[in-house]
Each structure stands twice: as structure tokens, then as C-alpha cells.
Image (cartoon, rainbow, N blue to C red; front, side, top):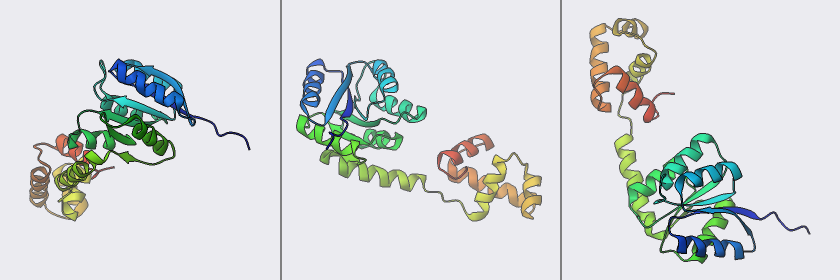
Length: 214
């Protein structure tokens, strides 16, 4: 039976001793092939974009470009590599931001090299990995943000917001929905208050951010 193709791995970490140790562990793993290493964020982004490894390990504290910004750029550019964030900072906000931007895993730098290699293998196979230390905080952060972001607009207010996004004036919205201009203005006022904005452009931007507009 032919041997399976190795899982290509890129390692980006600011600490040279840790980077060397992790790189050695990856090289010694029978299922992995180390395709690149760096201690710089911009070099990491360029390397991942060019080589498209199956999995990249990203230190949050890389100089020139932080790990979470690399995750953002990789997602924006559609690079197929799966990314694991590695950080000494286990704040729930950072974990949430990394996962929301498209990271497939988040590990703490105190993890053993064996645990990181296990995470690489799991992520390469399509899984998602969260270090045990960050799981509870991530869930709490997700629930808190969900409560903050949950749309509270009524059906009519949602219709008004959509028509604002289409560039319609209050009289035009009223004509479209068969309601008076004063009623439209009342709905607009409620939309602004619920979204925490003060003008139409901001309402549209916030509506798009929250997934209320497509």
C-alpha cells in the first residue's frame, strides 16, 4: 500500500529556542513534513501564502505582524492552509477573535510539544482544537458576544433597515411599506437606538456587521 502524503507544516514563532524545539518535533513526526519556519510575522504570511502548507502554527506575538492579523489575512485571501494560534495569552477575547477569523485551533505555549503535534494532526484531518485551559473562557465569551450582537429589531424595523441600505428616503420607505413618513422616522429612530448608531451609514455598516443585511 502506498504511503500517504505527509502533512506539510509551517512553524512561525518569535522565540528561537521554542521554534527550534517545535520544528524538531515536527520533523521527527512520521506524518509531518516541515516546509518552513520563521520568527517574523510578515515572513510568515508570505511563506504560508506561497507554500500553502496543510497546517501553520502561528505565535500571536510575532514581530511585524501579530498571529491574529495573519489569520485575518489568510482568511481574506482564501489561502487553504489551516491555522493553529499559539499564545501565552489565554484571554477569552483573543481566543474568540482568532477562532472567529478562521483559526482551526488555539493552543497555549505551555502545552507539550506532543500536545501541539496532536493538535496539528487533528486540524489537518479537519478537526478544531481548543486547549483545555481556554475552552470555558471561549464559551463564555461567545455567549456574551452573542447576547450583545443578537438582533433586537422587529420585523418592520428590519424591513426599514433593508430599505435604508437600498438608499430610500423616509417618504419612499413609507410608500414601499404603506406607512406614513412619521411612522418610518419612528422606526428609523428605534433602529438607530438598538444598533447604537446615529446615522444611516453607520446603521447599514452595523447591520452588515451583525449579519442583518446581505
